[in-house]
Length: 201
Figure 1 (cartoon, helix red, strand yellow):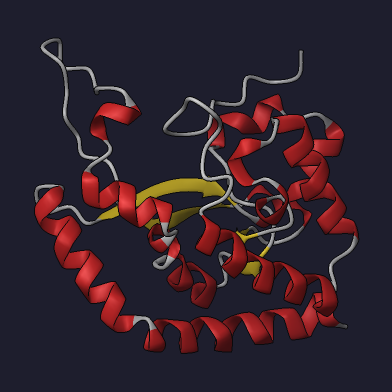
Figure 2: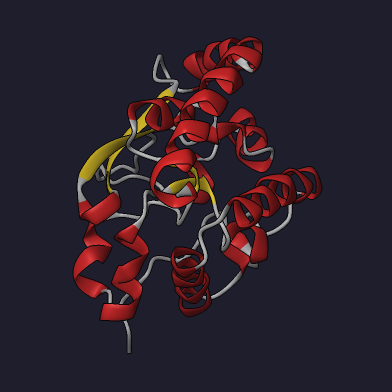
């Protein structure tokens, strides 16, 4: 019953309350990133959701659009702005996704929505991560986030799909605050962002 009805009910009202309570932070970060990113405080990107339905994820834009002499974007580390680094470290970049939760694209808790180009690379087991709505945070995020391997991340995602419950979601919810406070698992060692998924070798 929770998985098919109450989870969506809680998602909607928690996201609405979260947006109201976090609105002062939302406004301040939006203004800061507006100036840091030449008038572009938000980042929108197509991502696969439940049943691989495509939606536009909304995040705060933590990297600028600086390019080299040949017109190619600089590396992620070079484009990460100081305020963007702070917003990412504190996970404030995830706040706009509460809008995605209100719309029904996402859940508060679930496997993180990844890039569309990864879809053909999943094996049958990994593809099961799309059996539920993607989340702002999830079981993999509180068990390593970006500091664990892709195989381990997918294993944790599928475990969550098979064990969705109020108890699991509450555990993820409260553990997320602990992880954010300690800034754990934000990136893999030596990288500003996680390495891309290249399929199963």
